Image (tube, rainbow, N blue to C red; front, side, top):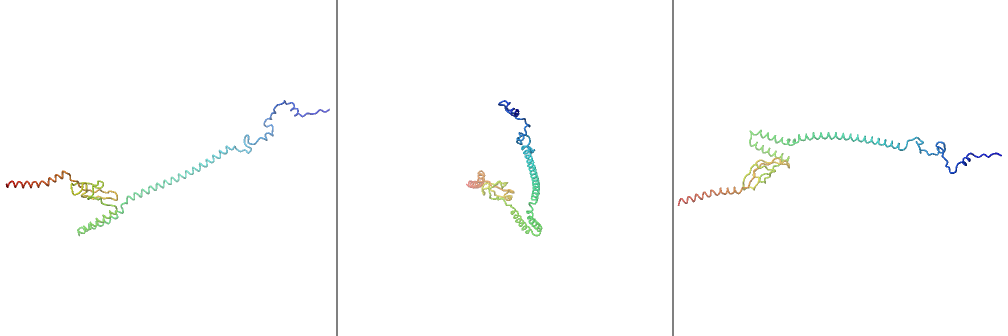
Length: 244
């Protein structure tokens, strides 16, 4: 009879102890398991690209560099504008200072031009002083009126003085006089006229101020008036007594 051949794998299964765990083959021995492993779970990807984290860092650096370049260009533009504005302001300041100096230098030009006619009339009056004195007087009066009109038009006005209450803000008292004809502290005489220039005091007026008569002065004056009358009565009495 022919002997029956038993497969080797069947014998191995029969000889393996019951409950034993089948060992997995070492890595690299089973080609099917290596092929079933998903791509990208270990090492670099199949396409050879770098990981996503590194590429994001490179993008962030490029974006920061671009923003830095934009801000640098903007700062340079602002600096150039500031430099131009500063130069323009410096030119404006110099021009204003020059114009102000010229204005102060020629501020009285219009007034001097108006006073030239007054000067001409003075010269005419002085030229006629030997020919006709009355004409000279009339010319001086005309020049005075002309000069007064020019100064009034420029803003000159006199300070009220006589019969006004004394005001130290616009009056300068240099004399006092005791009198009953005026109230106490009243200006009774103007010694030098004062003037306003527009709303500002240009020169105070020099004045004489009234002062009320004191009681002693009144008594003294009364005694001085009554003394001659008493002397006349005494003389009359003496004459009468001598006759008797």
